[in-house]
Amino acid sequence: MTHDNSLKPAGGSIAHFTTSLDIGGAQAMLRKLIEHSDMRRDALSHAIVSLLPPGIFSPVGTPCPVYSLYMPRGGRPTIPSLMRLFRISNRLRPEILQGWMYHGNLAASLASMVRSDPGAIVWNVRHSLSDPALESRKTRALLALSSRLSSRTSAILYNSQTSARQHERYGFDPERTVVIPNGFDCATYKPDRERRALLQKLFAIPDGRTCVAVIGRHHPMKDHVSAVEAARRVIESGRNIHLLLVGPGMDNPSPGLRDALALLPRHRFTLVGERTDVADWLPGVDILALSSAWGEAFPNILGEAMACGVPCVATDIGDSAFVLGDTGLAVPPRSPEALSEAINRMCDGGEAELAERGGAARRRIEEHFELGEITRQYRRLYQSILRGSRAASRPTDQLPSQVRAALP
Image (cartoon, rainbow, N blue to C red; front, side, top):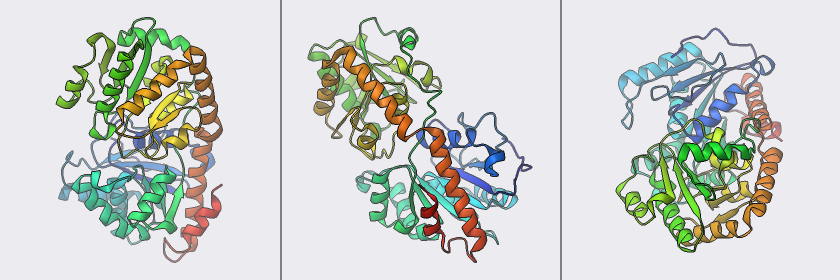
């Protein structure tokens, strides 16, 4: 952990409050945003405050300091962690306090409340709310509190139009809404069928098998059971597929997932835990499947796979169908039958159609979700807020209209 606050250009300072720096979509976007920011040109300095101990997604190759509150995982904030939050915030005195995810958003708001010059609060919501009843009791309580605090922000960032509308219905201030999608580094994630050999070597996938990958942490939201059931149906239809399940916790499946896997031939699937080398072997995958039942806003893995020229099948949660466009197939959630039909349809056209879909997917990412353009949208947002907050008597005065005017 670094405690260096020497880099603070006159252009403005931003503190990012995040739940963690573990592997995850929000953490990945935060890391990409900082690593691809030109601090001299932007005249912005960045710092990160992680509620949990720092994880492997800390930015590299940048002067961005990282602080931690060392909150207990899964527990309530402790008095020492709250004191660290206030102490770090007062030391950094950022002009913008940017929250990431619900807990990080609340931390940014709390940090602002104890300062004489509170700074501008920006939230970043990375979750969809198709059915709030599916969320935990703690999350629902956090949502209720957040809805009451939302009008005190300068902007509420969403990476999904669907998520924005859902949260507005839940009570989040619609006047604060700004939508900036996820961005993808097309130089890192790129088509390369030569990586097929690496994929087969790493995960013992035999020649001739169509590799269907499901990449994501082991969590009920991801509904891996439906993915496995869909794979079983595809195999029973006569397709020569291999199911690859990769992500934190996947090497220690839950009893329900183990029961579903028991119905698959053992040589037709591979379980792999957390990996940090996804970009190295993802281009070798034939089809990416996303089986999530709820919660997704803009799944990073869809954009990463599409950038690699991998055609995708995804459940219609959040903005997944919009991200895919006509390059992939969207199906209803919690429907193994629909998911299996989509995988079979992908396979029907053979390698030629998969390659055609993959090429179209790559072009869609380049045209709409390229990382350079997304970081420019963040920069314009920050600069607009800084101009507004410096001119206003209070940080939230006049800002929403200025923010909207600054964005494309």
